[in-house]
Image 1 (spheres, helix red, strand yellow):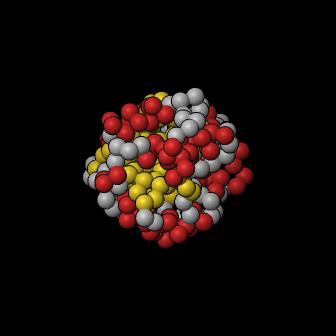
Image 2: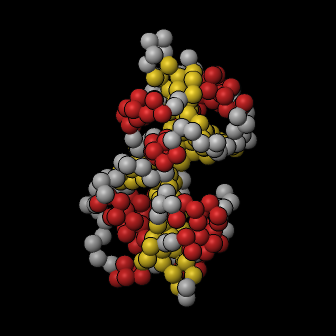
Image 3: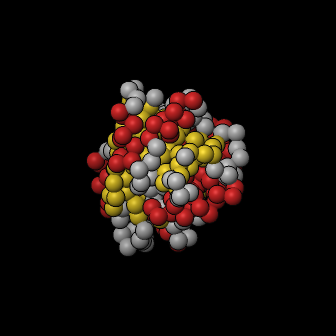
Length: 260
């Protein structure tokens, strides 16, 4: 049986998804930050005959995330997504690739999913660290302009949403500037009490291979790890993967993203 979850289901949901807190950081972060009663967010649970939770479907705006290690109601979740007019579906590969049997997706992207839970490989000293500064809401337009120059970044960034997320503490990051303009940046998203996703790591094409992105990542990762959080990220660029592994990230699986 599938039903909408509510505030009374909070502990039940968290007990289920925190079995794999890295994979479920989006679900954990969205529920911790926004709860169950927002116009833009809904959470459904699939229960067995004994009332045991066996699958979770989260809607955040027009994107959906699925999690289950059990025999969940695939068609039931899919019918909800169709009714809610989904634009994107994502999740751990083994969990969501079954949806390909039900839908002819327009686009599929497969990435590595990596985590970092130790400072052992992070640098303690680097002359670039003095150039690294924390981003604030006034940097939002500059960040969006930088992203427009990055070939791998195909999703349009809303400056207003970025400003709001930084202002309200849902996102943080570090950058390096030259002549007042951001030339390299690393940010978080989906931060929750136990983990955070690193996103948007990039450097202006004219300033690459100088260690700027690594310096921003070092600062951001050290800060988050000192708070007891596990860090996660996606990558599909082998060169980016080499940088992340030098910092101590380890691949733990594959992540799929489908466009309707």
